[in-house]
Amino acid sequence: MRERPTPLLTFSDPPTRAITQEYTPTYDDDKTVRQWYHNVPLYGVIALALAPHPSLLFVLVQHYLVVLKAPLHFITHLLIIYTLTFMMFSSLIVLVARDPGPVTFEEPRDDHDAEEVGLTEALMSPDFLTPGRFCRICWTAKPDRTHHCSFCGRCVLKMDHHCPWLGNRCIGHRTYPAFLHFLLCITLFAIYVAVLCAHALYYAFNNPYTVDEFSPVHEIALVFAGVTFTIVIGSFFVYHLYLVSTNQTTIEHITPFLLLRYLPVLPNTGSNSHLSDPPLEHELSYRQRRLIKEAHGHIRVYDIGFRKNWTQVFGWKQPYGLITRIVCGGSSMGDGKSFPRGADIEERLARLAQELVQDK
Ligand SMILES: [Zn+2]
Ligand SMILES: [Zn+2]
Image (cartoon, rainbow, N blue to C red; front, side, top):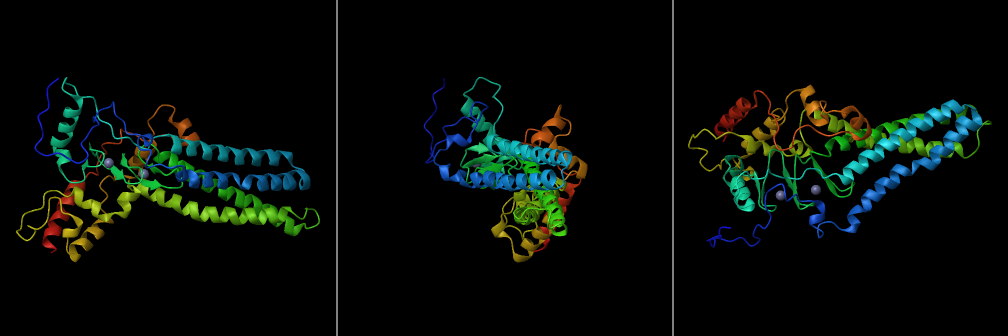
């Protein structure tokens, strides 16, 4: 193998990992980042998911078997409740067990040293020369929509957000459908429990001598918990429905200045000589910042239309996709590294760049 010449410049933490398929950064790589107490919120989520079941079973037995004497209704409600619970836990397992999106690259085709070729490819590719396209911490190229998570200590493909509640992990390209499935199951479960118990409570108020004294207490507590979870998790779920419909991640939605990375080369008017290419947030004037914030509301780089956006997230073309989607949310289409952009997006970005240099 060729001897490597002594470099003129060395980094304090020299790259030791090859950017190839052989190296896939995983959560277990960095034991210092993940501690046992990071899982405590996850245990809390599991406890919250299991907490209503004793009361719920008590209410079901008392209301449908003892009072109404309707075993068929009892079995139907039991089946619906435990199907939703099973679906909730299956997507939770996917969220905890599946890697949200490891950044890997193809094996180099020639017989050069893999590390050298991988790095050179990454560094010299015009795509990765622009700011935000190379991670100096992981020492890897960052594909489209990839972000470095400081909690996980690594890059995640199409990172949506870092979730401390689900095992202190990121929600990324490979786990986002399971995350939506999990939110949907909790919301449906909460609505179902609230309606079921409200109905039993209504019956108890109208027929006070036929029910025991404990059932209404359980029913009031379950209605309260059901309504609370419907409002809290349901509104979070609706927010994510909006994000899927407009093809945005949470990070993209809450960070308007990410738009600067997509701008074409600014037209040179002399007045913008202080701006980098692409411009950085702190270089912008107040008016320019406001312009970008306004543009962020309607320029969505990856929005390719409502139906295609949904297809991209839930992979409607995959074989046996329907079963996995029902059980645990399925998986997204594509490799998570490149995403199609909206039809007229380049034109709109060029117009924005023009406005940016005029609006000093
Ligand atoms: Zn990184
Ligand atoms: Zn993370």
